[in-house]
Length: 122
Image (tube, rainbow, N blue to C red):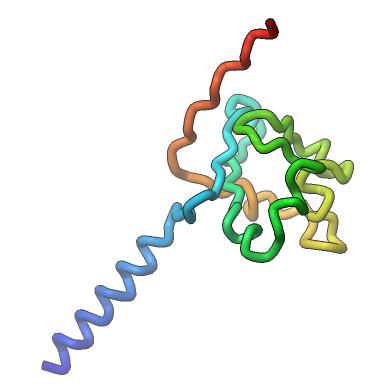
């Protein structure tokens, strides 16, 4: 009986650990708009943990002063981040960790949802 309890516990722990691989919360955003340049740079797409940020900050901290609230509307690049724009407004090594650890953001192994085609200007 003791052996069965130990085995079931082990399976439970392994199951929980496996479920967290490639895991995203509701509202998290996979950023793959620049998929070709990401592949060229040899980095994975970014999975932005929106809910992680949202439980710490009110929406107005980021929207609309930093980010436009529309999928694909924000032109985010590492140059802009390193220049203190976009994510770099907070991820500057003072407010939050700096953007020098690539794998912290470029971590998404799952599918990248398609981005809408740009709307024609009328």
